[in-house]
Amino acid sequence: MAKVELIMPKMGESITEATILKWVKNVGDTIELDETILEIATDKVDSDIPSPVAGTLIEVLFKEDDVVEVGKVIAILATEGEDVSPSPAIEEKTEAPKASATEKPAPAKVPYTPAPAAETTPTNTASSDRFYSPLVKNIAKQENISIAELDTISGSGSNGRVTKRDILGYVSNKTSSPDSTNAPTAPATQAQSNTVASTINKSSNATTHTSGGHEIIEMDRMRKMIADHMVMSKHTSPHVTSFVEADVTELVNWRNNIKGEFQKKHGEKITFTPIFMEAVSKAITDFPLINVSVDGTNIVKKKDINIGMAAALPSGNLIVPVIKNADQLNLVGLTKKVNDLASRARENKLKPDDVQGGTFTLTNVGTFGNVMGTPIINQPQVAIMAVGAIKKKPAVLETKHGDVIAIRHMMFLSLSYDHRVVDGFLGGSFLRKVADYLEGFDTTQSF
Image 1: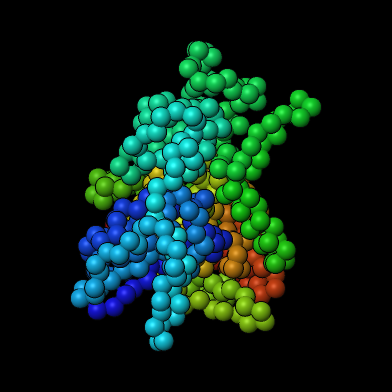
Image 2 (image 1 turned 30 degrees about the vertical axis):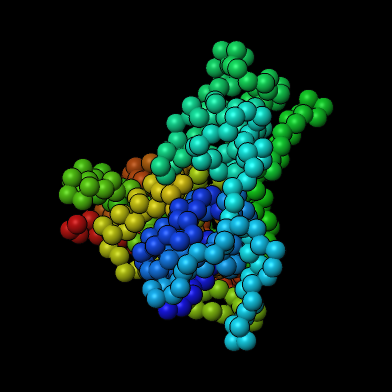
């Protein structure tokens, strides 16, 4: 009965555009509610875009490989009862469509036609029926990988699609192999053949060259965006960092004792991260002014507690999936959410909604063996907490018989906060409260 515009969704607060990887549906196809229409990719997430309605796809406004700004109309759907007799919507049009007096002018239509083979193939070889994303094709071109060779790479993506990680892994094995010089491809540059690192940060616009014996690696697009976001954050917020050291011995012993039973009962491995998440969500409830953002001279107090968990990607870049309403989940629920998001982050299967809406961020620098860190605030949030590695250390314990020295599991917590709206009392009190919840962890709880 009506036409519905399909909008390029917002993928996160720092992402402004996405690349169309593949149209799963064609003009004239019937589509169910929430059925995938197309696949898109950003520098952080590859994602499927579902249909917001049940109906028919009557027009696509961008073709595969196009980069589209967030918020733009990418397709037109018709709900049941709409006349969907396909006009030549996917062919080049020379006349602008007529609009009624009550309708806004339709957006400029880009025909949905496959790009010429010369533009989509990495090298001057025969084209392939297999689909490759623009990023994969450009990496293949830079590494002098032919289509025939590309076809031999096993893909871990949807429907066997070759991902960035797949091709970089292939290049890594290829350059480290003693027989790589005999491969039937054009010779690589000295910089490419001497180090795998030259491929880690490559993207569609990254280049590598040497200068005076030094290797120059251009930042990939995601790294450039992270850099811009970090500089913007430091420019926006006066950062202050506070530290506390927590005795988490009882917590560590409890987890060691129950982790086997926990996995057997729930089918999930319990790490320390969901325990940290639980303590943070409790402390935010006690100090809600940590869970805010700044809008000019206004403080926006968030009603939901959505905790982001910073995760390193295989490429070395960073992504922050978000656990929504973390305060409403028990330890089992938090464990399942943490494991699910971490797994899908490693496999590049996060959805747009998974990386937006965060109100506070937790980063575990202890994963890399670091004992403490001073993280940069993830704008527009006002605080981020880092947890360090848990180390056995001698500590003084007060007992009824006097002070004693014992071996304890100790961990540093650090909180970076925006001193425009979070002063030392609030920041320090919040951080101490998180440590108190960890030190007072209930080891008698059932799960």
